[in-house]
Length: 324
Ligand code: SAM
Ligand code: SF4
Image (cartoon, rainbow, N blue to C red; front, side, top):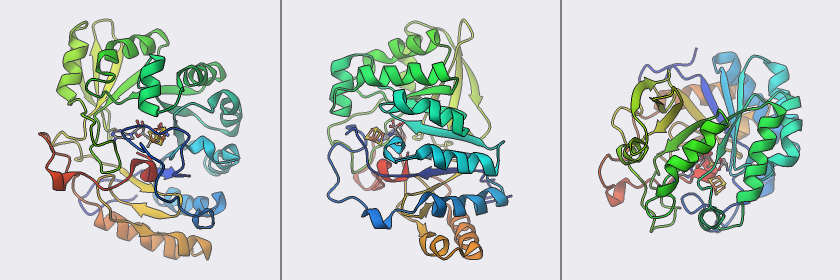
């Protein structure tokens, strides 16, 4: 079992396979970064997998593949299969913008993928275009349909932004309800890579929008899930991911691995330790030592404040690098 320096059990590893992306979401990567990680610095699937085996053997039971846009990485299904074959009962999921799902969903399902979280911020083509800075909506909706058709579990993530898509919270909820899939509203997390003009919606403002049409009943957090769950009058459940709330980090169970092998203890902070040398040398003990140190150093909580963020409290971490 993996326990961090604050007594929390860590059983969830998020693995980013690339920082590159085919979208330029305003809250994540509004412009192409000054430079990408050089291809030769990216860990191969085998190298990433070597670390993942160490983490699984020591207590990780849930793995999420993410990015950047993970479906940009060629032969991703072979990576999924490696993990699935090693531990078929692992909770194996992927987070994606869905753009490449129409042609990849079946192969991912066949390789052993169980679930997808899909980002869907608008059902209006021009607003989806404005957020992703590309005409994406039709292809994203096709991707969602394809994932459902092949039998993958689907959850939808929406980041409500003031004056942009804040009038679509109920529509997106309706869209998900009709398809019997769960939506999770994510508070915008201020970071230095995002478009400076953006204003996110606070969790309570998001709930107020839902209350315009529904009565809601709080269910609570689902284990160590970051999502606080609610139920509306007909039993439909949705989630709210509210990292600005003071108790958000209390049960944090996750660490993150980047595509170049940096093991990150917290989404907010810059601190990380590299496992690259260890996995390139096949040094299992070395990889395990880095894992132990990162757990020991895991911060108690993030610094997204409940009120307006202070300038110095805006995170410098890039979501496209850590995988969100
Ligand atoms: N490209 C994939 C996608 O968009 O789903 C996976 C990577 S993306 C970094 C993972 C998640 O992070 C997405 O759900 C996205 O909405 C969320 N995200 C990115 N930047 C964010 C921000 N500033 N605040 C809140 N959520 C953010
Ligand atoms: Fe790409 Fe996902 Fe970031 Fe949007 S949120 S820019 S799709 S990595």
